[in-house]
Length: 476
Ligand SMILES: Cc1cc2nc3c(=O)[nH]c(=O)nc-3n(C[C@H](O)[C@H](O)[C@H](O)COP(=O)(O)OP(=O)(O)OC[C@H]3O[C@@H](n4cnc5c(N)ncnc54)[C@H](O)[C@@H]3O)c2cc1C
Image (spheres, rainbow, N blue to C red):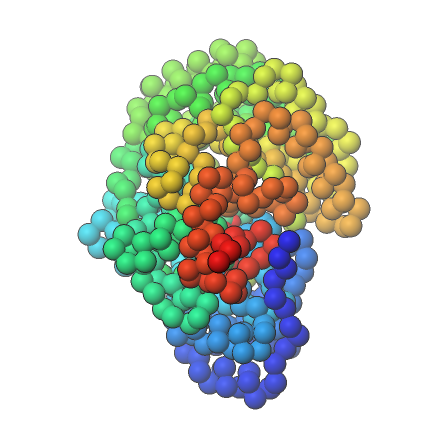
């Protein structure tokens, strides 16, 4: 396994020269601004303190940071929204925070975003234009990290991944060069940026995305049942969701809190795009018939798309930028091409209840795949998972991440994966990285791995941008 480069620091005069070269700012340990900026959006497996933070205002700032890092042997690690579960945007080297690059320009059906833009402001800016981009729901996730690793969301079955909409990008390479890549220039770099995961080929400073029309109207729904009906809900979901029409976006989530006083539950939530309320009522009635149990909570609302996204995002938790995170999330994902057979469903339902302990909750989310996700050829972009039926994401969320809780959560995750993995297709979602994943290169990149390694050799032959699960350059 290739570890990131880290070296304690550099002489004071070198830091002064770096600061003088920047349009943006340099934050060093000891200041309040450094303390606030060093925290990513999620608590990380290891709390790393960068030797410095460059808040980059443009590509020249990024190039200056990389030049400094190379001269002093200090890793330079980009961070956009800081939501990476695996801590890949944290470092004990020099953190390159691209947040100040936050311009958004809309023209000719495309949007150009600085690498520091978050999903929420992008959605809000596009809304008056009647346009949007297929991407996730969390408003503080960074567009850069999200798009570079794929980007699934409510419009994905109709329009594909966010990375499928990436048509050009500006990138600072490991040698300091600023390159523009699109279909006509450095097309292989663009290909690699479309879904292989951030932080491996250079620091992206801006991205151009094709927009899509905002759905005219949406039926949002959210049904919750007591956990005892989990197997029936999974059965109904598997028989319907993966084959549903593109405009139907149903997610299913099992939630088992650590605290035994809070009841576990199973939820079905999502939306039907451009649907009328009556059709969705009929669809939900079919599900209720299939489950054969009364839900404890039923929400169904017809209305515009963006408010529906915001409403459904209340199902997840999020922090405003700058807040210090306190809960630790760990997980594993895998794509599936066949339905889980009944014994596996029963084993999963039972597994979420096994050895519950206070301090961490367990969640299992089913995302329907197919539709436009699978209509893109496997080798058309770096994102390799194009023949899938659904994606399963199993996570633990520790609100009291003591060593004992962390260890118990990891043991539980590994055991749960033993239950599910035999039925999986072997692929893992790049935007849900799992540090303990065996054979991670094949799991993330499948048959695109060899080409990715060739692109890495061309653009970062010295493997400057690296982390324990990054693509290594092809051998000479
Ligand atoms: C609360 C929450 C909700 C989420 N919801 C969804 C969802 O609905 N759909 C979905 O698909 N995913 C979702 N994710 C996963 C999310 O897409 C990934 O964690 C994504 O990588 C986050 O991007 P970021 O910029 O916020 O993260 P960061 O941690 O800043 O970056 C992630 C990776 O990209 C690299 N990177 C960042 N900026 C750059 C840059 N400018 N140039 C090159 N590399 C860069 C980093 O070094 C790191 O390796 C969610 C995550 C969280 C925590």
